[in-house]
Image (cartoon, rainbow, N blue to C red; front, side, top):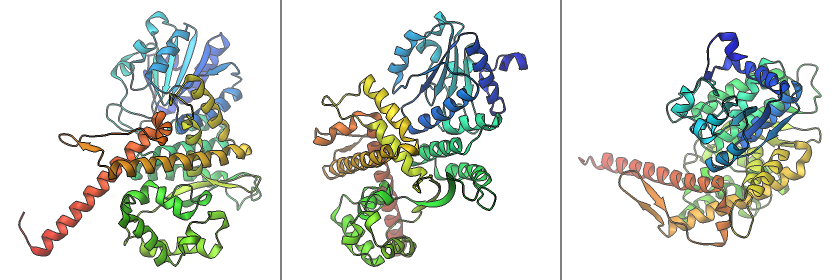
Amino acid sequence: GINAEYGERLMIIPIKLFDKCLQLWRERSIVGSILILVPAHSCDALCASRILVSLLKISCINTYQIECVVNPEDLGKLAERITKESTLIMINCGGSLDLYELLGLKDNEEAMIFVADSRRPYATANVEDKRQIFLMDDGTGDIDTSAYGLCAAGIMYVLATQINKAENELLWYSIIGLTDQYLHQYIDHQRYLEDVEQFKIDVLMKNNTSKSNEDMVDKIYVNNELHFMLLKHWSIYDSMYNSRFVAIRLGIWKTKGKRNLEMLFAKMGMPLEQAQQGYNNLPKKYKDLLFNKLEMFSSEFNLDGYTYPSFYKTSGFHRTVSAADMVYATTAHLESTYNVNKMVTSDQVMKNFWTAYDCLNLNKFDLVLKGFEEAMEIQKAIVRQAVSMIQKKQIVQLSGPFRYAIMNETADMKFFAHPLTLSKLAQFLVDTIIVRDSLNKSVSYTHLRAHETPE
């Protein structure tokens, strides 16, 4: 095992020893330990789970359970099922919580808890525990500050590479995990670019069409993505209007903001009725206009940085999806909470989890398409709610940088029963304030300089 080889208890397992974890899981499984995977309710955790399940099967570990968790209370309930034979693998959860207390490990001193959590900081109790809690740390994030390390799917992909089982499908899952971190703003643009460069190496190596795999059925390739949500599965107008990137920069909650969006289409030479058509039904010349003309007018409309490097995957059925598409579809399945009492039940959580888990399989493309539809509905609800709250001045500023927002009961409330959707609404409002304040400072600075007025 890990500690037997190094002669000491290691609470933080460095990246070079990740494969030792798999070896230990196998050894404990052989002697009857119950292996429980505990993923958070997130796209990245789902992807990590898919990679890990594949590695467990390869390692002949066929007995395991998966228990998805949404909040600390779920972990507390899980404690009731832990025995001294249990081996838990926490995926994007648990790192910041005192797991010794929360899971009742005092009563099960032989149980072992492995944590693959990209979020920081780690709870001090977890770092200092040298008997039962092991933190799988990639070394890219400070363990004691608020930051994010390598995505959980990336951690599991590293493990796959160490045992020479890093198949293209597992690489794809890890890319989706990274994209999930980026789209939900857990990591900044610079950190994302650094991780993209690392993944590019494996993508090019495994998908080099100049070699004998020219006709490979499933292929991953690198290409730029627009910050327009589900563009190729929506209309250009709806994609841009409902994308956080565009909405907060144009201020679509104001009449002027909507006019600016329409003016952008006019300047690009795209009739509004064409922009409002489904992308798949749009004549090629208008698709080309979008990509050719945006660069010309992006600065004028405060849309600089409208692209980012990403990855696409083609399947054997000539379908092509981007990593961002898969994040949106998968997350939408997780967020689906259409029940009359607007509460998220444990049964609903697990049902959503397995639907989202299956959605990652491109052979079940009907689930992907359904995910697109649900993602669009959820995003429209987020934008409607944000616009309403801004227009009605329901964002209240407290002392310093603190604010709170008031949500009134509306038909859209059912969408916000899930923490993921609620957090996306909050982030939308925060970004709106940040962009607004930065523009105001820019305008004030320009005004002062123009009139040479002292402060």
